Image (cartoon, rainbow, N blue to C red; front, side, top):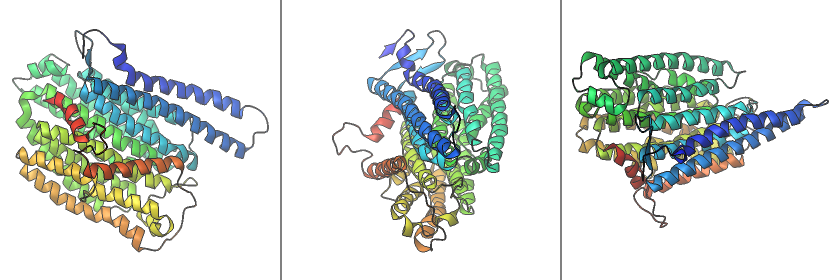
Length: 507
């Protein structure tokens, strides 16, 4: 359906989360005033009241995200397409943006559910947490729809600024403060690099919209190439591609785990989608030259990410370098640049969400008393005390490693097939070789959980919201391992077909 005029309904996903952020802030003020104003309120009562307020805010945030996801899925099924505004489009609503919006919304929703009991356990249950999460989600919705450098930058900053605050949300923990400061400083440098690259592109082409840049880029002069390199570097920072990954392990470790889970899946999705749209719309004639650059970034990310993960003793740092490696795997699809490769990349992002959220959910389930149980030693003998938790953790790790029988294997398989068809044999060999290296650090945790004695047992039990997230992620990993191209329940929905429809815009 083509829409020539401004259509307010197209902004429904963005509107829902933006309004949800404001409502969450106001709810926190009203409910806190009723609970805490008055004499004789003892500390224990305050903790209980704050926990109840947190549940209300979590449900309000979930409602806003669910409405945004429903609107995005409805627009995707309808084939909705429109641009803002008619003369000079800043945002493009199409199958790609609605697919990415729904995926980001799902990641945000699961992160909210992970926070319900986790924030009280760490005693950081403050209402602004959910507002910041929703505002960052709104920025990602803008980012995945951007078709102009100006809207791209605005979306990127709206995404990043709330996450800087969320990374340091555990204000009493030094590592959290350090993570926020490092992320902010390095993010500011990356934003400056990106903005300078945009200025160079505008100076070379006379346009800020992606289509205009493609028309003015024909000569490929030094100014334009410099601007292109800086823009790619700025976006590569957001998706943790080597050599722009240095912030990742410190921020993953220091940030609250629910925030780490949120940024690991949503920011990566938004970053790769906007990079995908920029390369296809703005640089259609630079495919071969850009492919070489992306191939180098992919190879370095796979090698360094996997090798550094081997020597980590902290689970969150290990997962950080794992995220760098997975960014390298995704960049293999970018280097291929074929319709099949774009489909494989989108399917990989979809599967990656469930694998990553599931792993971090297990880490969250062990947190208690203001302490995170994120050292590999903390998992020793977990199978003897909490066998179900150890079993799903093993499943998530096997999927991240790409073991057959998991959705992670299928995601890598489609990526490898697309890369081979595109002639990227060297990158495929690196992907396979580094995936074998990853078996060591991914299987290290199951060995510790099943073959060592329990040193200390956390008193916290898995909450109902965490059980729902774990069950959903585990079911998705098993289902898409066998039915990525099938529809056993007659729903008419096949995951790979959905990814293919979203990628149709790119070719």
